[in-house]
Structure formats: structure tokens, C-alpha cells
Amino acid sequence: DMDKMSTIAVAGPAPRAHFGRVSGLEITISAQVVSIGSHPTDCKLKLWNLMTHEAITKIPLDVGRRGTPSCLMLRAQGSFIAVSLDDGNLVVVDLHGRCVVRSFECNVPAMDMAFSAEGRWLGAVL
Image 1 (tube, rainbow, N blue to C red):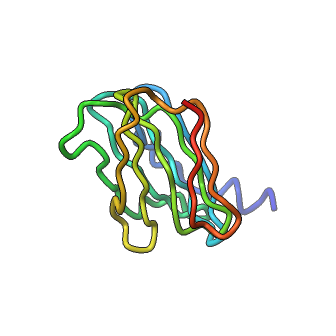
Image 2 (image 1 turned 60 degrees about the vertical axis):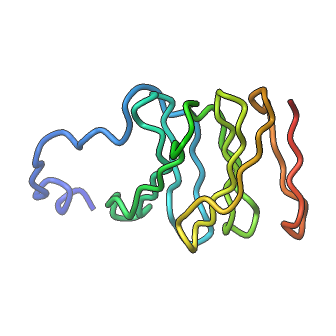
């Protein structure tokens, strides 16, 4: 209610989640916000608690890669994320293991992506 809201102390502006623009945002079934920035120095998938806004973890995507994230697609069951990088690489991240589990060299960035209903296949529009 309004009385409670007026007594909350504001500590100042929240820290920036990403440098530059956010190029992808998803909310998982387990109430985690998954976000990705498009700045070259910020090639990380970041997980946040939806209710508390606290950062949970950062998953680096640029290990051995030069590209920056350009797209984000979340599997319906919430365990896999596919990220298209501007250098033409496509990476699949396991949110449970919090790491990149597969990488594909497509030579051009994907314009769109979709997982099959059972999660076995990943299709990409190049």
C-alpha cells in the first residue's frame, strides 16, 4: 500500500546492468530475468531475480569469439538459451549448468531462432 511505499528509503540509482543497449530479454518460468547487452565489452548473459532485482550470475559468451550478442531466444521449458553473435556464431547456453554447451559457426548472424517443442533441435534463419 501507499504507506509502506513512502517509508522505503531510496539508496540512489540502481547500477547499470549492461553497457550500451540491451539486445535481448526473457523471463524464465522460475522467475529469473535473462538479459544480454550488445556492447563489445559486455558479451555476457546475465541472470537476475525477478522479484528482488538482485543479480544472480554472469555467463561469458565471448570466450575465443570477437562478436557481440545480437539476439536472444529462450526455450519454452527454460533450460536452454540460444544467442546469435554478430560475428556469425550461434551459442547455446544451459541455464542450469550456467555455461555455453554448444557453439555453431554460421558465418552470418541469425535473424531469428527457434527450438523444437521437445528441445532437441534448433533452427535459425540466416
